[in-house]
Length: 193
Image 1 (tube, rainbow, N blue to C red):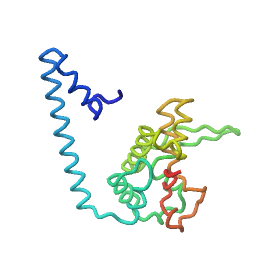
Image 2: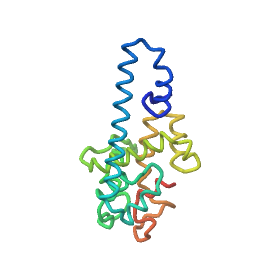
Image 3: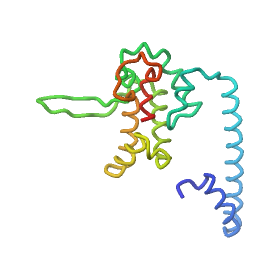
Image 4: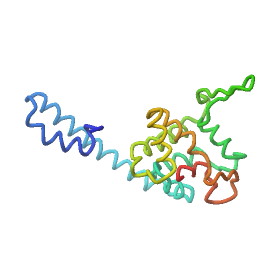
């Protein structure tokens, strides 16, 4: 079990709480109550955000992508603004901090860390979407990003696989590099594979 305070973990804790020593059981019950109160507050805030933030066509398109829900789609749309300000998808990826630094010398190419002077909110949005794909990768097993995550995780581990999904997610579908098609106007539509 990966999350003791997730749905399955809470159910298990409630079943096993009687087996715990009295003080440990009391503290665990208190923690479970706090988690439930926080879940209720988060749900209330999310509902309020959906009421206040009217969905735009861009948000509706983004929500169809794996790993992207209403709130994350709103963040992405607001942070990117008019996508036409970027000459191509590579520029948006650079703005979001999803491409590594490249150092070339004497015919050798070395890829370094991603830049730090980027739009942190957009970079975080990419990371959240990539982590959602990683967490639910069996659900996305038939999608390109799910397959990419599984393949790289097997060879290089979770963190490298997340980085690969993040850095690949900005690529438009079908290798298209134009921004004139409404479906491809969001370069990170590549998340859909």
